[in-house]
Each structure stands twice: as structure tokens, then as C-alpha cells.
Length: 198
Image (cartoon, rainbow, N blue to C red; front, top):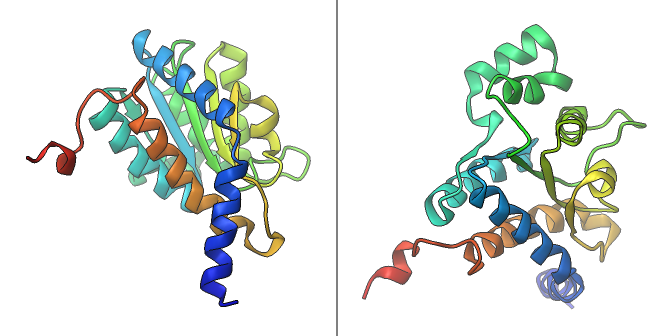
């Protein structure tokens, strides 16, 4: 079997194993956030930061959900990293944006962060603060979900079907899941461009 066929077959397996109840719970939280005039802060590092930027656009444009990504403002982010440290850069950015209990966080992370292993503490610290103030946390994560999987109000965990391809499958399916979110009839309020052309 070719690598391409194997990779695509693994993707089919993942689709069949994703917990649709977790997806629906996440959609419900995101809808409630919008209905209550809350904002969505989307966070991730590396590929997750790229996803955060794209998803931020989609939630704002397609769903009418006010959304922000701390990693989009490279001047402020690097100033905070330089002056305050990477671990608190995101949460300090969000506190500076009046992050509050009406808001929600959407986390894109392969491992979900780990306080014990000191991994992705920038994400862990946001989740900890969100839980302290009563803001909701949604995650789209891989492996066992890590800290995000434990603490999130809704965590969509991308199943592991091959230990050698955890990262590419997780990051690929994060894009699929957030596009599912913004296409969900409970969230989508505006047509996308090509679907609106007659």
C-alpha cells in the first residue's frame, strides 16, 4: 500500500472515531458565548497559532462571533515575551484585553499542554486563569488531550491511529473541526462566498 493511501485511510479512521458529542458540546458553548455578547480568544503555538489566525477570521466573518488571537499582534506578543516571558505572554495579553467570565477560549494544541512536564505553559496559564474567572474553555487537541483535555468544558480529542503521525493528523483535523464549527447551523449566520454565488 502506498504512503498516500495509508495516510488517507488513517484519516478515514480518525473521522469515524471523533466524538460527535464533544463537537456538539463545543458548538453549544461557542453559541452561548456569542448569545451572551462574549468574545472568543483563540490560542495555540506553532501550527496552532496559524490555525488561531485563520479560525479567528472564520468565526468573525461566518458566525458573527467577536474573536481574537493573541499571536496575531506580533509587536505586542514579542514585547510581552521579551519583558514578561513566554509562559505568561498570552494570558497577560488577554488580561490587557479585559478577558472576563462572558468570554471563551478555544485551544489548538497537539498535546494540550502539561504543567508537570512544563510544556506549552503559555496555554496552560490561559486555561488556569479562565477556570478561575469562570470563562469557558474549548479545546481541539491530540494525544490524550493533556491539560486542555482535563480542564476544558468541551474537548474534541483527535484520536491517535499511528504514533508516528500524531502531529500531522492532529493539526490537519483541527482545521476540519473548526470548519465544522463555523459551518454548524447553530453558529453560521453568514453564507460563505462560493456558496452565495448563483
